Image 1: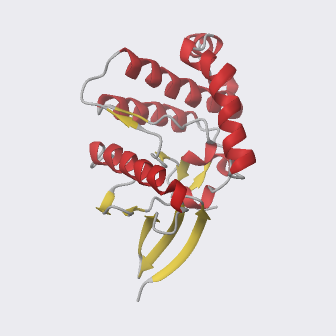
Image 2: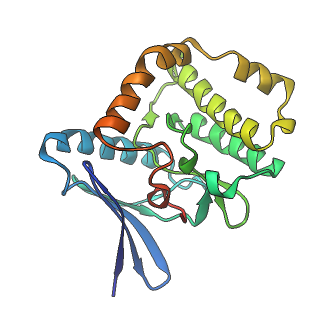
Amino acid sequence: MVDSQLLKKDLFGEIRMCRQGEEARIVRDIGPARGWLRWLARRLLRTEAKALAALTDVDGVPQIVSVERDVLVRTYIAGTPMHLARPTDPSYFSAAAQLLRTLHRAGVVHNDLAKEPNLLVRDDGSPAFVDFQLAWSVARRGRLFRLLGHEDLRHLLKHKRTYCPQLLSQRERHILANPSILSRLWMRTGKPLYLFITRKMLGWADREGAADRGGRS
């Protein structure tokens, strides 16, 4: 018997945790999405599926179980979202940086690590990244990829600065103090529009949905 728990429902569909015995899966179903947004929901689902496919067998990211036109099933990663776990162990951030390098070597930038619920502290203290809807995966890593990868790193270092600033190296402080042109452009133009759409039109918050990210709320 499968036990299904609704984790999140919004304009883009539903996310459920399905358990059968000790096994748990996260199911993203865009069937219930609003008609005028279904095209975007499908695009985000395809984006996530492509990124996760490039990260097969990478420990610390969800693995694809199955994918169809409107449904993506991925593995569940047990852990606590960063804003609840508040990690201060140096090894956590070292391992998170290594995981990020693994993503980038595989040709994937996450593009959404600014949101703390997208970073988990697993039960053994190790990191995990979830929610790859905005990820970008490429066969060849060009200048734009490197710029976006740099932003991934800056977001991780911002979290490190929040929870254990004393651990930041001089190089890491320099990276934080010198945002890329993409970051500066985003802060001046893209972010105000993003906040208007997500908060005013869709009613989202940056830390909303921690439970649907793959970890415990």
